[in-house]
Length: 327
Ligand code: NAD
Ligand code: UDP
Image (cartoon, rainbow, N blue to C red; front, side, top):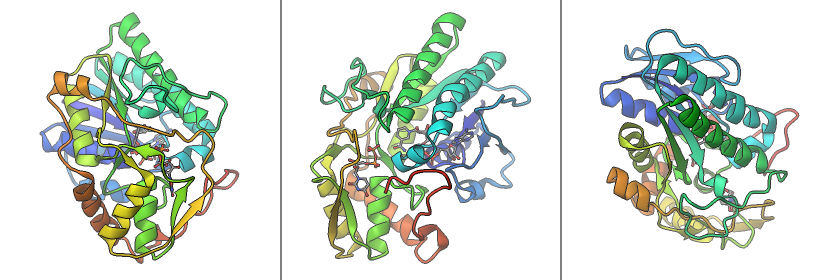
């Protein structure tokens, strides 16, 4: 297959690119590098089955030649990133999704949208099944991301029902691993970078809120199987083992061997209190479930971040001009 992956220079997009290339496919990566990094795809330069187009997919997007699949991963994804880039986030989820769908339709290609557990908002059903409609504040700070993704799902379903496009919707739950941006503000990268830099670990609120962390290799395998063998209904892909944020902090301190103190900060507005995927659908349809537990996944991720210690990528975050910083 020849597939287009938007957001290919990002954390998940670059791993997904590797997965397609490993199976003998050809990948055209499209990315404007707003939150991605060239290091994530540097190992692919010189690979004849990979090409890269630097482009903002919120504007008209054209890729020459035959295309069999379009996987739309472009979007700021960490809360701090999308708080700093609210309009770009809304645009890439709406206009960007429309352009990526239009490309798939023009080429007769299969389409997959990277949706999120954030469509469930601060959930009133736990764990979250795909049938749950969610509890989202459209005008709260997270609304720019959550509502863009909800619109993206609706648009994808409309292309399926109205145009007969072959589509997939994956709801991704908190995923971590090598190639996360050190200062992207997400909890796993924050805690590891803080521990390795001998800075205090910042727990927002009491730390009793929960997340269910999926190691990137497991997440990518689930997404790949959904693209190849799934159907058009939304599908949760995530690790159902749930941890509190405090438990995560304790695991990071232990595995890094850095006895840094814990500092409590204010809990951000509308921060979901609980999150855990029900993966019954993915298990039955795809024969998929995660294989790598939190300690193993964290050890691999810590090894990656250790390789960046002392480089400019580990330096404190500088807020984008005009943006608000979430931390
Ligand atoms: P990331 O920030 O590492 O990657 C996103 C990539 O998209 C970056 O390379 C960025 O430069 C690119 N991009 C953003 N806007 C663009 C635009 N307008 N045009 C072209 N490129 C653009 O984030 P990630 O964690 O790899 O997330 C990838 C996708 O998966 C996102 O759509 C995100 O919403 C979704 N997702 C991720 C997670 C997770 O835990 N990592 C959870 C749920 C959903
Ligand atoms: N969090 C934290 N300290 C940090 C970063 C995040 O306690 O330095 C918390 C955050 O408030 C949330 C959870 O960790 O409850 C996960 O945050 P993240 O930004 O990784 O993603 P979310 O799941 O909220 O989109």
